[in-house]
Length: 535
Image 1 (cartoon, rainbow, N blue to C red):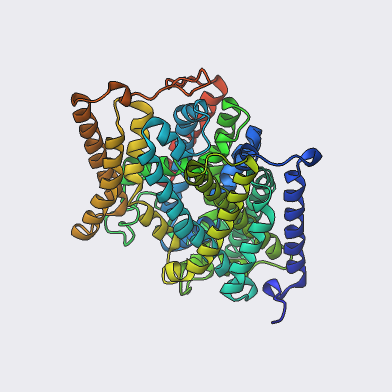
Image 2: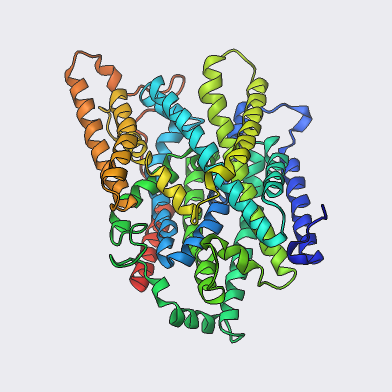
């Protein structure tokens, strides 16, 4: 097999090769332990609790923005338009909520994982069920999506067969993240986010300039508005063919809140970065930094898809928009943008693999094998990460090969389970009377009710379904917990105890400093301005 050149250009291929060598070198450099010291579980899974705010914020975005985000959301931008940016813009205000109300509780509990939090708050049953669920979703939904869409991009741009593209991504993720753990992932994420944002903005800039026929970005944007005005509706009307995906005003007041709170607040893959911060204030500053970066993301992940409607109107599949647009870029810049895309893919792969390793090792393996050394658990984590990547690579084509908009597939699938997860986590934080049985009822009811509504009310938009199931699960969990409260049961079972060996109590303070408060207000005002402009 001949060595593929990116877009047939040696310059582009050299740019990507230099980036890959640089990435791996930096990852190994920051992963080295001084004096031959071996990594312990805190080093490997939580970066030794040493991440500064800028690394926390950058890593949150790098973990979030990957192939399914760039390729998938650009595809949805091509098919739906700017309305899909609600996932990005509403995530910004969700991050502020997470920083103010959720993170203080998690850090006061000194947890490694979200299942560990659920065990402390409820019991071992809740922890085990949710740990197994999250592992399944991470391997068979998230990892498969990242690998498949990443390989699809490599195939479109460089002509590499899909299977070889996935092998390349697996090898690169293993080379840069498996040894170093979260520290290697988070610190290299800073570099990757800079490259990602710069490359994405360059792509959008050139695409708009092409639409304006060389008369500048402003002209190109105005032409785009004139030629594709339907793509700039933030709130879709009922007669819009994509109303089922983004059902009008429900996007602002309904189920998308549930999806966002689940993803940004209770998702190990994301929250692990904040748990690794030096302290609570550093974690909160990192979350604010990430919130402002999220406001910028539609320029990088949605606008290119809308621009492709004018530049490439006859694409066979919506998810081809971003890769096909890259092929219009000049030599050199195409390599830079491709390197940025690779950066997004491998950073998300590394983050996901580390989270899988953390949950498997700390929540499942260590519970059954409690007497092993720290080095042993780190080794088990590395093995778990390797197995997860290989499983995802094998399952990627069968699971995702037939979907036109992979991003929407991911949202719909996870929407079956997130209502129950959000219910049991919110009640666990804010309602001391919530019981383990109430949490289990919420988790089981979420999947059952979602399936029933999916087949008995198929015209109900999935975001509305998520909101409705959330309300039902909330009611069931509250009723179950209250019934237990009146039964013959030890009242102490309802109220979580402080962590042994520390003075951390359940009533973690929610007060935030003035900088955080002003930054949060700024996010709200910017969101109001954006929605007022594109309503």
